[in-house]
Image (cartoon, rainbow, N blue to C red; front, side, top):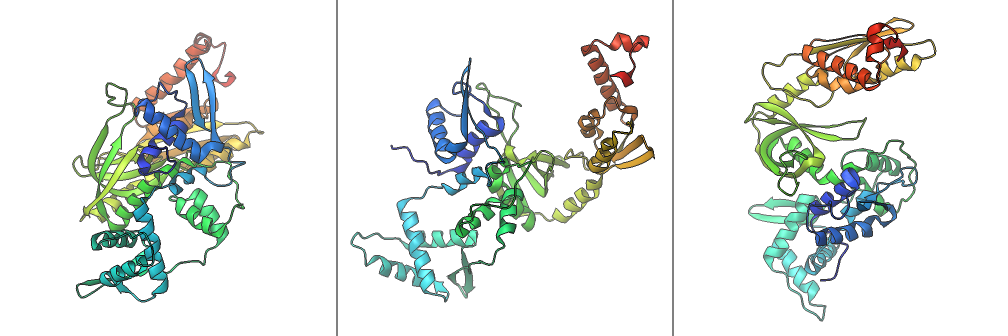
Length: 429
């Protein structure tokens, strides 16, 4: 069968794009997700969509292919192209345009029987006869109702349909910003295409574009949260419980989604959900979620969400804990800086999140935070090493771990003996 650049199942192309761009730099032999033939087919498909952004480098292990995108040159997220390459059967696309023509000529609502008669009349003008039965037309209409393209209302037992009004009063600059920054920005990108707007007024120093691949998952989660539903969640934990071929196994669970959190530092997107089986909140990275299926309305949705909102002021990141017997932990450290290092003082104020900063004098500041998981702060605290004059964790295990890491660093640089003998002080490092 001839190769086609169009995509029938987006989840497959999503996997390959993630492997190329997010996790990336794999050779053909290292790629174990599917067969080598599938690898070649999907690589050609990605290249047809993102040919201008594909790069490669030759190594001793082979040829590494990857996506390289310069946000200074690319004004719009190129990954949206994958969403605009969906394939259709001949019958499906034919019926689409017939229905759109019928709705354009009839402003009043039409019953299924009316629409079926108009479709038959429409096709009578063509030499090559094509037929669509009632079931096919009904399924297509219900699909469009779900997508918001068509409106439906019941009059007694009969459903009537009409095309949804087009919203054409858009601020182009607002759409431009929305499409590049906010969740499900691909929607804004589709609308911008109709406006023939090529150049945007915004440029982004930190442009997190890979969330585009998770737009369908994000949209389903928003629907579930808005409708207060439980969901069947299928996800994968990478590098955990790998099978014989080195692939991660998918997991299934039933949870109640309460919030989607997006890091302004890394662009990573996380779902916060309550798992009733374990009585715990969990966080799931959206790029690890394979499928979301909406289930029944959760009677306790508001309780779960309010409980999480109570915890939110004490979360540094997305680490969650057991719903009961939660103990808060305290982190406190003091930093010193020179007269020409006021940017350290500014950093503390800018990056303190849920913590507080007390300026003891012109060259000394103290940071303090009360959180559920103080381990989350450790990577950030490490960026102040050599300026920290005092530090304390209420969780003694984490404090010991932090100080042991410092001792190992001293040994790595061969200065542990000098510090013990007083030849080198921590201020000299």
